[in-house]
Every structure is written in C-alpha cells, then in structure tokens.
Figure 1 (cartoon, rainbow over the protein chains, first blue to last red):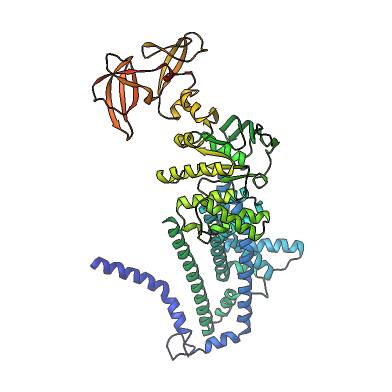
Figure 2 (cartoon, chains in turn purple, orange):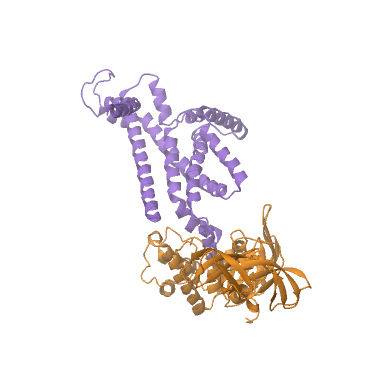
Length: 268
Length: 350
C-alpha cells in the first residue's frame, strides 16, 4: 500500500516537473496584467494582439510554408530512399542505415553550423543568398532521415512477395510500386510526414543558422522578442504552438492504435 | 502447338547465391497439361527452380525455354505464367474482387468482362458472394482460394504453385489437394507444383522431380519413383524404407543381411556393392521357423491403419508395417518376394 503511494507520487512528481512550466505558460497567457507574478483576471486580449502583430504573422506564415514544403519534399525523397535501402544487401544496408541515423543523433548545432558554412561557401560560388531557400533546404535535409526511419518498418512488415505477385500478374515495376507498394506503406509515409512537419515547426537551432537576415520563422521571432523581455503575446503564441503540436501528437497516436487494431484483427 | 514439344524446358541451369550453390545443372522439361511436382527437402533448390520459371531469378548459366522461345531475360510481367505464392501474397488493401481483377485491369479488359470472369473464378474456387470481403477477414483456406483464382483468371499457359498448401491444417490440405487436382483437370492448364510433402506429391502429380542439394535425383511417375527409387536419397525421402548395404553376386541374385536373395534386377557388375531398398509394408511377417530372416521385435507402435515394428535381425534394424502385431521381445520370421527387393547403385547418401 505504502509502496503504491510512493510509486504514484513519484510519477506525479515527474509529470509535475515536466508539465508545470507549460501549465504556467498557458495560465498566464490568459492573464490580464503584464505581470508574471500575480493573476489579475481572465482576458483574451493577448491572443487578439498576437493576430494583429504582423511580424509574428509573417513568421507564422514562413513556419507553416517551410514545414509543409520541407515535409512533402522529404517524404518523396525519403520514401524512395527507404525502398532502395530495403532492397539492399545486408552489409550495404547496414552502412547506409548508420549513415541515415547519424544526422538524427548529430547535435543540431553541428548540423546548423555546417549547413550555414556550406551555404555560405556554395552561395559565394553561384550567388545564392541565405534566406527562405537555404532554410528550406536545411529543413528538407534534417527531415529525410525521419521519413526513412518511419517508412522502413512498414516495408519490413510487408509480405515480401507482394511486389513479385504484382509483376507476376502483369504489372510493370512502376505500376506495382504505385498500386501495391505505396498503399501498403502509406501509414508509414503519413507518420513520416507528420513527424517531419512537427520537427520543422519545432526547429530553432538549424533555422537560426541557415535563415540569414530578413527571413525568420516563429521560433527565431520568439527568440528575438524574448531578448527584450517576454511579452504575454509570446505566452499566447507558445500556448497555440503547444496545442497544435499536442493535436498532431494525438493524431499520430490515434493512427497508430487504429493500425494496431487492424493488425490484431488480421492475426486473429 | 505440337503436343510432344515441351512447354517449358530448362537446360543446364546453374545458380549460385553468393558462395552457396543452389542449382547444379538442372535439366528438366514440362509437357503441356502436365502436373509436375518438384519435390525435395528445404534448401534443395525447388523454389529457386520455380522462381526461374516465373522470372523472379535469372540463372547464372543455362537456358530456359517457353514453347521453344528462350526467355532467360523476359521479365515476369511478360511471361504467360502465373504464380500462387507460398503465403498467398494477396494485396491486403484490396478486397477479394480487386485482388482477382488486378491482372485483368492491367490487360485493359473492360468492366463487364472483368466482372463476369471474376464471378466465374469465384465459383470455381467455391467463394461465391465473397466479392466485397476484405482479404484480412478470410481464413487461410479462403485466402488460398483467392490466390488461386487471382492467378487463374489470367488464363496462363502454366500455373506455378510454391508450397501453396503449406500453411493449412491437415484436413483442409487434403480437401485442397483434391480441389486443385480437379481445377487442373477442368482447366487443362499446366501445373508446376513445389512441395516438400512426399505424400502430396504422390497423390497429385503426373510427374515427380525429386531434388536434393541443387541436383535432380530422379524424374518419373509417382509409381516409378515409389517402386523404383534410383538411389538411397529418393528411397528414403519418398515413403519409409529399409536401406541395406549389399552385393550383387550376378544378375537376379543379390546378397544382403547374411544371405542370398532372388531379385528382378540385372545389369550390374559381378560382386558390385549396391544398396537394397525394402519398403516396410513389403516385409511379410511369418513364423520364425519359416522366415528368410529371423529377428527380435524391439518395439511396436500403433499407427492407425497398421502397426510399425522395429525388428533386429542379421545386424540390421528392420522397419515393418503390418496390420497384425507381434509381441515385443518375440522372435519372428520375415520373408521377402523377389519383386519387393529394389536394387540401387551406390551413391553418396543425403
């Protein structure tokens, strides 16, 4: 009995530490006064101000556009890469898989700085300026491994004779890919897309180094605004971002559990 | 096409996977309307042979002909051959109708014709009214039927079946054996069937090709393979058998288990060392005084139709199948007819 109370309170403590800051953030985004110390009544005015702030709205637009394009491109490249890796021989496969994992484990700061140096170097050769395009390329780069890692398991689960069965029935390779392989790995492609999208919205370090001047996404804007003191509008914005990521996460989980259910029915 | 011309011809096929030799000089022909079974233990190369016919593997050397045309490099989708895969490989995201219609849609068949053909196929495999069912909701046996229908709807010249009944339970397997045999008769399509189940091979085939370690051991009708196994491997693999080392004294005269027997074989060198095969059901159980060989019963097992007895005599452990049983420890006599003794040339075993 005592043991259970201790176990429960330990878990509660961990959760408290994790979520207290966010709860405080959310609560104070509805606070009437600018003060962060005391509660002086409920208001939605910070949210209203948020949507009138053109700097924030511009960076929100950049962020969403960046997330959308980078995840779509990463999904296309990553899916084909996953199919290629799946069909490799054992040794080659493990080499390529490790090369794929490396950027995932690599500190963002290293990725960010190295991308910046590369863009500066290549930019000076072909006259490319740092801006939205370089940021986009950077986001595509760090998104690809996540797509590969979420598509590969689907390929592994697939009956390995499906592709051959399609060829056997008269399908060309492209037709078989489109009509048989793609629908089979679609759940993996979609979770890869959602993950890439979230990571792109989430990213600060790599964006910061590759954005150049003039363009910024939300995280960069918040960072620069926070340097002059955190305004309640930032609380409101952060709350909205947290809620959207939460919704995405719930969406991913619902998908996963549906998939699981379908599989279990199949096995039964 | 000429009836006597083989529909499929494999010539000197060799195939290695890395360092492993999978097929070693396979020569084989399949006639039109024939039911040919490739039989052997796992890893003998039977599935690889089938995959070469289907176009999923290319031989390292040797040629494969289809109706006289060399098709070594023809991709699977251009071969008039369809395959029923080991684990069915049905498309999980399509329903039964779409699975069966897959091949027809690619060919550009118009909708009413597809619908009619799918109906015919479903009727043939006894799945009327299953059109809209999802593949996931079907039992193993039903999935198997859909896989067969999906292949046959394309009216291939040859149907390749890769251990199609391997995942089914015994009773269902027996039913499907009969059904497959019926489909073969009704459609007149040539079947090339892969299995490791010798009984299945004996029941269904016109011709059996016994393979081991990438080599063909024997090709023949089920009767030939069973009654006249060419070597110890075939004898051992096809049904149970007693294999005893012996010596061919002269034509029709063989010595083994310490005495001389009359037999029906000839054409061996005088005093050539040979293997003798005796089927367990061919050994007659007689009184210990009148038998050709006497022995002591070591064990008796009830097998349903018969008893299986292990009898030690003349330095050999004999396996006997008989509907009557002897007591364990009893001394019995065993007797053999000349036509129950099969002589095989010595080969390296297994």
